[in-house]
Length: 197
Image 1: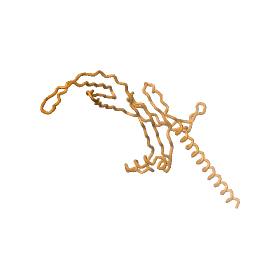
Image 2: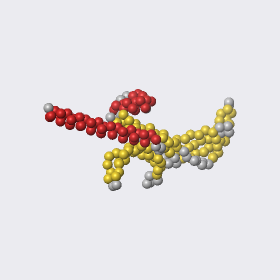
Image 3: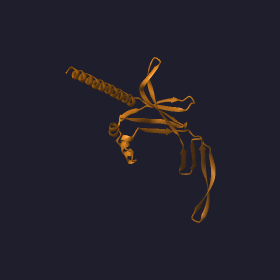
Image 4: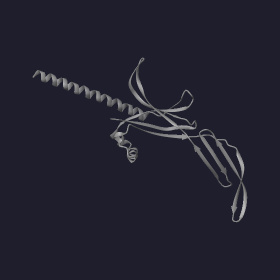
């Protein structure tokens, strides 16, 4: 009888320790999520001088993701992907601003009005660099402009380890680094959600 009581006590202790470990892990995950939701995007420059943004990742369960991000979950299902197979989802909003000084040129345009051919002078401008191209015409009563912009956003997801003196261990947070190639681009909003099982 004593054997069974000892085995029962050992088994209950193991279950309690497992539950305590799971409870602590869940508390740490929820604290990281609170920190991620309350912190703003941090801007910094890379060693090469490019602007970069960093934000902390959310860690959600599949059910939490479906509840809190219902629109995103619906879009993912429309793609034919099951939420339980999803590893991570990222959302990014970037804004491009460029101050442009372009000289105006006179351009002659031939227009047909009824049976007459009319020559008219309009103002034309063009500006471009590696990432952005702007051109347009200034008419007497309006302005017509075309803007083309290209950008490559590099997203790097990495773990931030806990530190004690010089020892690094475990995971303190998961961070997302976003580096745009276009110098006119500024990251306005970024969100990275990692789904946990």
